Length: 315
Image (cartoon, rainbow, N blue to C red; front, side, top):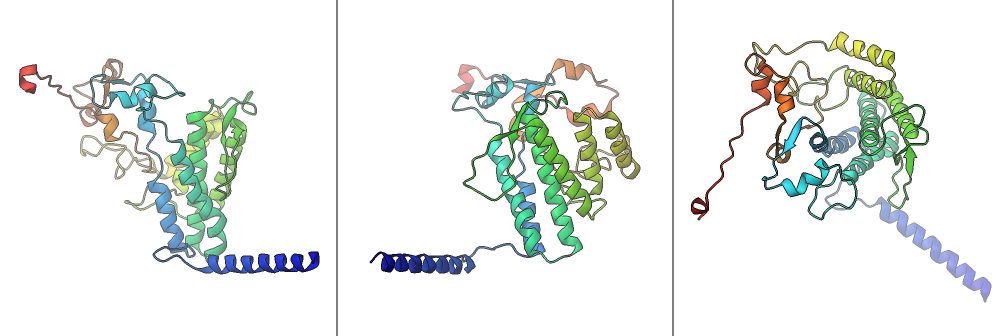
């Protein structure tokens, strides 16, 4: 009887496995399972578009900006400006931890699955190169947002952020050290270097990584690690191919605009509208400009008129 039961159980398991395999072969209606380079370019575009707009939040912690405590959104951002990183008030905006790992999921999909299904071509190499580069940039941003600044003497024990290189929604992630995160950043950068095809990206898609953008990122990484000679070397390589400056006497395009000749990679949105309407430049920042002669001042700053209504006017 036990033998018969065992045979029946094995047969049931076999049918279940066959059923699962057939189910996995079925493409859900209205959905696309990425296979081609064109498919994975769309996945990568989604990763770029979902990259967190977090640097405007970090700007609230600098001495360059002051918050308008009468602003409508003040209560949502005040705790970030206060450097309060735990026990947030329910109304507070939080730094985008989950958004980083959402983008990371897209990139892992491209790297782990796209490398198998895309046909070999320069386009495949470029897509994979950008995915590795963006993943490196993601972990570089995360470790500097949530971890300690890089210190070669303590990096191996300083708490960093969890590294996830697999597509596993059940995986329990544990924080890696700052050194481990930087090691992963360098590993992804090396793979990006080996695969990158485009020297520079065309205007309109210059939010994507290129060889020049990769060199600029490597210069920044070396700078944060305190490797001054390597940072200078990478920076010189960038300036050799991208050294033009905006002439503010003849153009109204600000240097950080995606169409500016100074733009190397137009990915980060460093000042979103919700923050713009809530904050204003500190007196210390304003005093660093010659407000009449410096053309940058008129491009980057404008006076904000605050109207306070009387009770009679409110009625």
